[in-house]
Amino acid sequence: MRTIIVDDRQLIVNSVIRLLQRIVPGEEHNGFTDPEEALEFAEENTVDIAFLDVEMPMMNGLELAKELIKLNPVVNIIFITGHTEYAMSAHELYATAYIIKPVTEEALRNALSHLRFRVPMNEEKKIKAQCFGAFEVFFEDKPIKFARNKTKELFAYLIDQRGAMCTLDMIYGNLWPDDPVTESKMSLLRTLTADLRNTLDACGCKDVIVKERTNIGVDVSKIDCDYFKYLDGDPIAVHQFRGDYMTQYSFAEFTRANLQRKFFD
Image 1 (cartoon, rainbow, N blue to C red):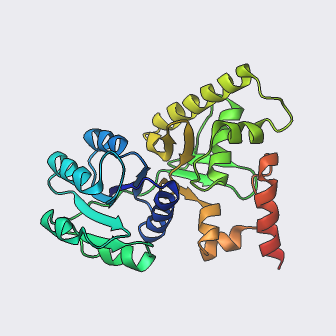
Image 2 (cartoon, helix red, strand yellow; image 1 turned 180 degrees about the horizontal axis):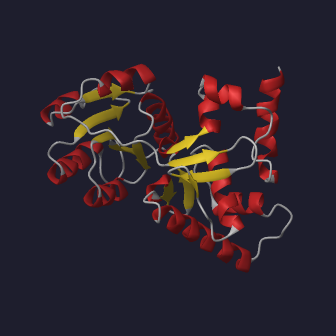
């Protein structure tokens, strides 16, 4: 399943993505605040479900829906809006659902259970991230070899952020906390980002990395991760945690302390 979420407010996009990751884990969810960028993405990728805000500048959700249907006549359109006056127009486009903000998990579940067109589900996740103890990454149960240690650390940091989009400044401050910002180091960071994407691409998993303009994150739905499972209350992951988390990285101290606090309470 590949979805797009389009709303001119990033907070709403992030919120819907988090809910979808909870409802249909393991699927691909892509967020956009610019309808034109969403349309460009749909031109290159088959979109199964489109969650569209109706009122957006430049191109509204109804107009975007028409363009998406031209690209893929069996795309499921789900409108998300704070207004009800567009319901008739949505009906004319044969939309799957019309969700009134604020978006709730119940409303999304209901919409997904009444899709007009059948949606294929993704295969089993190929990337496995071990966060408890020392951080390690596996592809089909074999350790991934990173060309640079800092590339591996960058991936660890993005996983620690659990899908949140990170600016280069944020990443720099955590990978080199004691170093002043220099152009050469920023250039190195951009190289590390490209190296990470290339490393994952070699495993057929390039889409694990999500990039929006200059921000970068990970698609948590594509990673089998003990840390993510622990937060979801998975009993096996809860049993596996013994107080250690990404032990080789200083940026992980905050998360490690929070996990230990819960563990020892």
